[in-house]
Image 1 (cartoon, one colour):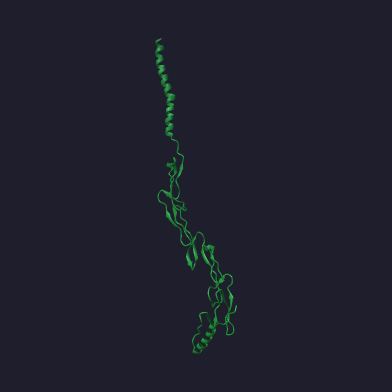
Image 2: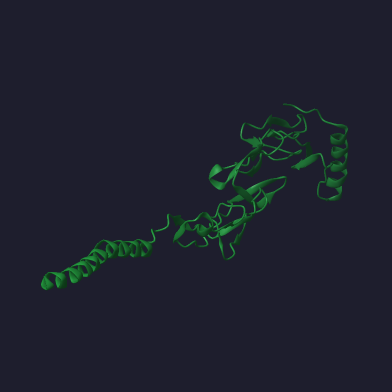
Length: 232
């Protein structure tokens, strides 16, 4: 890629002639750069310098290769390396790298940015996971972490609930509580045990009726019959 000398190059050479005679350092236009005692035109964005100019030839440029870029006019012989959006660092590509611009990264799902880089992110961290006994007070985003809050007495959460849930009231379901609820688990209910007191009382009444009443009847009947037998 060749660039013809611009009017500014001619002006630069004129300035060079004057400044050399005066013993002053060479000064070039912003779009040029000094090489020895002459000013060479810079390469445009998306390219790099392959060969510096001479008094006879202009600067020779080469386009940036894949994985590199140059986002401005340059006097460099190498393009910049594109930023890598590494999944191991919690990043993914938002905008791919081109010859004229660097890649832009953003956090993966479930991560948030902890270090910005221009319009993108250069470092990310996984969202905090709420612990059992805590609920998610505020969901995490690409720019902020998850906010957790503790459950109040009488409620529970396994760490994934958006709000704590009240413990099950076993009595309201005509059940008995087998395991008491905690801040991280619900109460466990079960069928009520049979009322053995009533069963025992009923059993006693039955046996009283079955045994005692016949005995009383026998004693009463026999007691009445014996004297009559003796009198006869």
